[in-house]
Image 1 (spheres, rainbow, N blue to C red):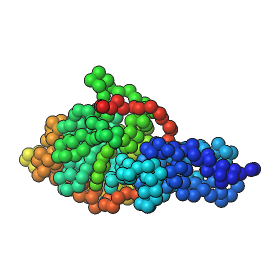
Image 2 (tube, rainbow, N blue to C red):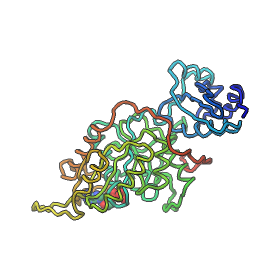
Image 3 (spheres, rainbow, N blue to C red):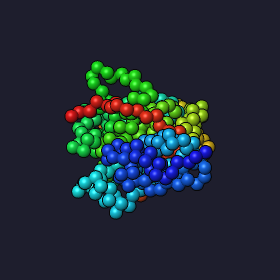
Amino acid sequence: MRMPSREQIQDALRKVIDPELRKDIVSLGMVRSIEQPEEGRVDVIVSLTTPGCPIRAHFEKAVVESVQALGVPTVTVAFDVLSDQEKAGVAQRLGRQDGLPEGALAAVKNVICIGSGKGGVGKSTITANLAAALQSDGMRAAALDADVWGYSIPRMLGVHGRPMVSPQRKILPLDGAGGVKAISIEFFLNEQDQAITWRGPMLHKAIRQFLEDVDWGELDYLLIDLPPGTGDVSMTLAQLLPQAQFVIVTTPQQAAQKVAKRAADTAQRFDLEIAGVIENMSGFTTPDGERFTIFGEGGGQLLADELDVPLLGKIPLQEELRVSADEGRPLVLEDPDAPAAQAIYHAARGLIAATPQQLAVFQPPSGPPMPEVTGTALPMAP
Ligand code: ADP
């Protein structure tokens, strides 16, 4: 087999365009190395402008395709990050005095996906309250509503409307209860299309836009409310966010714990770390102090033990938690001393203890390549 020369490979890589900087990665000086360790294989290292760059999946696919087009069967792509000096060089090549645009997630320390095996276990209620609890404990927190069919974050954080777009063409999240920033598909729907029937490609595109085009600013925690189960959206996110961690919400029912385990299995398949389990609807206590274990007992602990992760909290059934969520005022802010609120604060502190505070360094995704989707999924306000 005749292997292409280094120059031919470099030429092929000129087809790989950085979508943010709108130039090819060779001219930008972002190709760190090209190696041919054996016949039929080429290893490329691409240097990114920021570690939290969600478009790495785009680069990976484009590099593999352009080198394979030269007849090389095996192409591996790895990533590193440009030094400040190198970034200044790239900016100079682009003729920019003001440096490079920052990647959307560059300043997000911890990305936490909140998942569940099935719907109705309180995943969204926990996400909204956990974000508000983290924020009131002095963390900067935001909620990304990726539960695209059952979006309820806007209602629970009392925030509706259409986001503005910054001069840099970034979508600005809206401020919800307690100053928690939020983005939801609801913000982009028209009155008449409240029921959305998006599938595969449009969904991928929307989720990618939520990650790439939203200006989250500096955050300690971005909580992502996943749809229940282990569908498309969870897969997309797992691939785009290889450094994200998972929190699994389950009920105390031992049968539910088996369903929740499947969500955990998805996370593990993509090598995503599970930060812990939260058990919700853990018993109901009457005003007289009598406790009923309506949804059984022990499921959360069982799942946590099986996954070998901490049980971050057991949130009791409390009507006020539901009422305050319906009214857009999270219980952790409305009545921080309520038993359910206390339990959520406890979980928030457990999460803080279980997650790193330093800026997350994003690694190349390990899953199969992302399907490429073009076109704009989200109608944006001007
Ligand atoms: P999911 O996101 O898992 O589908 P939701 O968060 O929408 O579930 O919760 C379903 C319903 O149950 C909501 O009305 C919510 O307010 C209520 N709920 C959730 N957890 C509790 C709880 N611990 N006590 C009382 N009501 C709860």
